[in-house]
Length: 555
Image (cartoon, rainbow, N blue to C red; front, side, top):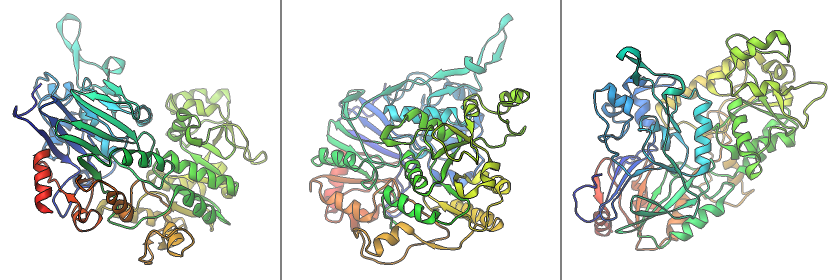
């Protein structure tokens, strides 16, 4: 394996997650770290860059399997080096895949802007991750069609194998599956990538298994934040990491969402949603589907209001896998149910024998166990047992339910339910930050208007709690935040004041390197003002010594 120029130093290159001084990149983290002394060369995250991707593709369009490698390079979506991509993709381009170009990929957490490029990576590339991330990625892969997101396996669709009489055939099925070389680490247990020691720390984020790291390079300790926050359900994890790295030499720190104000806690989400549900017919809600902390918040609101949170089978699979971890609801709990939505051939009725073929032919194998759950009954009401729910159940008893509705299902769900006049839609995920997202938001508003569910622009409910002084004041602006619809969302990141506060507690000699930020210049002018800051440019290689010298010179 080649480790670069053969001279001393640690080289770092942001192929994703950085831009220019004035305009950075939000997401798409692809950070190459190459320690020429310790002989450790690895990629920190390999995520899809949402802004760059949305320039070329709009949902549901995506790169075709056979052209993924070529287009990833041509469109500048993913960093490529010889021998990095999958064997079948490279063979299709008549390229031979030889020795591994890296000692591995280090995954911070299982979000698409950090792991979305795994489908391109060869199966024998070591990928280091936390067990929670492995579990999340496994369920995500196998409930989304398996070939779409190849996080834990590579499913070769263009590979050939010898056939009888000397001919070749394209392989399929289990013969085409190659398991990835996934290497698990535990929080605060030292492990190595190549010759470099790395200490991982769980941090608070909007999904489980998010990690930050203390990398022990030959030029000093490099702390890498991953995505983190301090207002979620596990703030003590973030605090433990920050305490451990306060004397590090470098801090690569994300600044995802401090370019706009955001407030609140998950407990606030529960409080506000509880209040909004009062006197409503149907309550429809959208949230990040793998955010179990948010599912818990909404479940708690349902317990308070007597509603049942109705989730799709893929979210039910997550709850089963985590089995009550962190107090997450179990599927046997009274106020949660699984929606068995209509399929192409119709839907399976109760366990009538005449519908057995329909059940087997219409639902995925992993969905079928939920068909055995007892159906929700209006006379019995919510019960402490696993429950399946149909849209007609909701249509006839709208004030008994809170229904998860993704954008792709909105029209069909609302058409089947015919929401009552006091129905409400709540967005419990971030508002738009790209042009495509703004267009999608307008589509949603049009749908809500069609079904009489649009209530016009609304003040940010969580911000109002703070601005009215009803809770500890974090901000002093006092300016209302208005969204185009009801939004009740607590983010997975720090806000501006929190970022400023945590950086102020760090050693003054530490070099701050911002990434994953729309406006990295704000680190210099505001949140890290007076500190030693170096803003990396996209796709430029620096040694840590160069970063140190440039930061000190700029100060």
